[in-house]
Image (cartoon, rainbow, N blue to C red):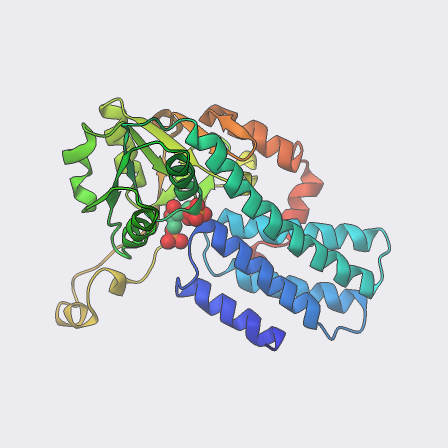
Length: 328
Ligand code: RUB
């Protein structure tokens, strides 16, 4: 497919949530940049970088909360920009971009495997789990534990308004795991039966707070109230370096029609709708975060951010801000 068309298709699919989930969004953005690099007709290095920057900005504007998306773009463009600073020519820049894309995809898939392996050690036979939304990382933990022969069951919230829980339920059921689907508001009703809540992450902030699908924070507070363990499964590229320098995560608000039909909204034009897609779970409600580098308490988030991005210096802030959407 023509690279421009491929980019447009991926941008549209992320926006319409045909591609969704923080990890998949990041990998798809990388595939789009790979297509742009491969098909670029730029005549010199500057034109190539300009083309890649413009594709990066378009991708970043699709889901504002997804730090995984920003970090994946940053990962690839940091390698391209560093090569340029070292004097790489056009063909070298292209090959650096393609190698970075391949590495990101390989490493992000390995991270999910590793999270499955590490996280499954925290699941015991007889456990009753509860999960919210659809997360590849959380699913990897449950799948791995099941393959290892542990017997447990899972409550899956349907996850209004987009019902991602149905997909999770189908996925777990296909593995043979006993699954019970509940409405989101029944979480309190069942929480006393639950041993562990396990969810994925869209963002982990520097203070260890979790940004994940709307409803996660209420479930975490219920778990806290009933002394139920709350586990987050998150690849380290979902940790946000911006939050280490005081920025706040932007919470995406989506269209009213995800909640109410158009006809209803038309009939009652005075009714307003708010539809935030994510919420923030404070670190006090989180027992542990399972990453591909090991298990950390939420207070360890800042260490991961420092390890990944270095002690963030002003020059580095500038480099990553190059890809901020509001710079256009
Ligand atoms: C999906 C969601 C998921 C995280 C983690 O939200 O909140 O829990 O993205 O998923 P949306 P993964 O459906 O709005 O994208 O572990 O697969 O990255």
